[in-house]
Image (cartoon, rainbow over all chains, first blue to last red; front, top):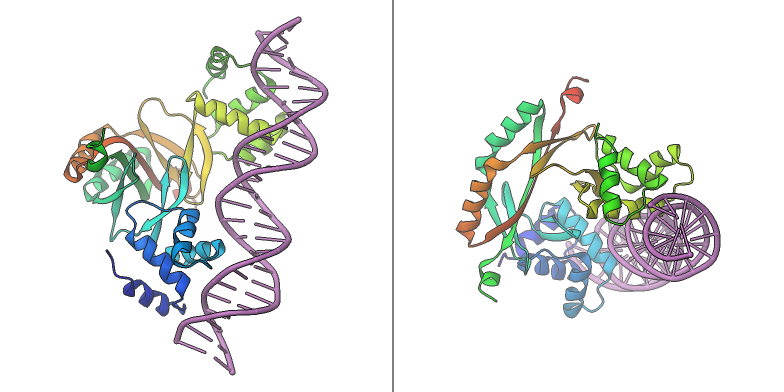
Length: 142
Length: 142
DNA sequence: TTACTTGCAAACGTTTTGCACGATT
DNA sequence: AATCGTGCAAAACGTTTGCAAGTAA
């Protein structure tokens, strides 16, 4: 599991205070295998920090995303769940059953993307790629 | 531009009535170059059909999506805009400036996706791919 | 002490639901 | 005539904002 200190350091460098609520939310997000929604984070966080307010979850998510520590994950049925941000330019493969997420490199694709864009007269500025499937653990359960 | 009749035929086959509001909404979606949100559709539709209700827009979108005539488009900042559905398995390239959307084939990628999934022990069931860029027209404007 | 953060309440925009009326077949 | 669709009003939902009190540095 990722250590919490680096994230807190980055917060400090942005003139932010390292507070109880923020530590709890950060720990939850760093330790999760699947993308978590604001309400899920709120519910989990309250187990460790009962005073937690939903608004604080929203504001902390906004801040962590702004600092590139987490990223929003789009899935059929929800575009409001968060995962720790990948290092460099990686893509997600998500298990349809349990939601478990893994990152992979997509460097091989840049040439293809440029070719497609060229044919249509576009210049590419960004791409979204995400795979859905069944993870090994879920595949072994019947 | 796509003709409206085939869509209306498909509606009929689903025990639906071909009504004024539905025709207006279908025409708008069939003719659009960029993804439209419910409110945008509502506003445009009212120009042709002043009695149009926003609720009807939502219900028509739901029906058209269910019949695979339109598809939801995810973009940074909004996951609630619609475009006519691609034929077969195509992907989108969207202009960051004007929103203009084009489809392209991604058949070449299936091998890569399978390879990635295999390495991680996943079996792939679906994939989302979308490119963002600048379209020829916007590139020529300074 | 100062600036930032929190939780609450309320506001807001979007989407959904219930229902009586209207339209299509 | 029967069924399906519509628009309105209201409810439900997720998210954001204003503010006074609390907390970290």
